[in-house]
Length: 310
Image (cartoon, rainbow, N blue to C red; front, side, top):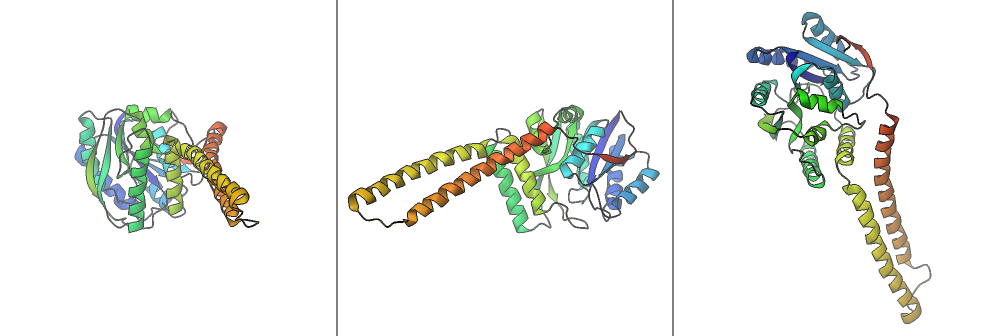
């Protein structure tokens, strides 16, 4: 068994792979530990796979997994964790926003006896105000509405012990939110701080659409608050309806001040209909995720790999 596995999901990162591997190599040489690098090609459309194959041909400790299509970042990381065979695993993206040199601090802190050591950002360079604001807001809201302590200002960049890797393998849900799952698992966890750099080259594969999807996965996986919101909204609307009904009866029978086809009736119908649609949508999100897990399809399919079957 190796000392360390470095899990690297790849999606259109041809401009970053060479520099990333060079810096990673320098780091593990300083650590002096037996390390394997696992690149997961998540349906890249550029020359990322060719570069990974070149590295694998030159270095015996470079492993690769080539997906049959794009399955998503969290699934790519999951595939790497499924295939790694080491005492600890590092998760790092290929865009060089998370500095590989921080692995030394992560590894040394793990050696002190922690099962999870995550990298906590002091600052985020090269990102728009909107992206930083929405990310900051989401993680703080998620922390408030869930029963587990998901650390804020963190991503997937971290080192996890083998026992955590094995626990993740026993959590086969379809909608992966790994940082939440790792927090839910528990064990001794701590962090090291750093300043996140700008992307070295290329464009991020994490569009706002994917960020929203990840946010929904995180909320629906670790919080029932949206369902409670639907229930509370129902009671709230019922209360307003009772008040409006009493007022309508008063206007009709006592004050005689009413107009056929009363505008407020339309407003009430629209308001109630809107709340109902929101509630149905929330329930639908949960049912959709339940349905996906009941079908129990494989999380991914591999086109090619140089990792021996276990």
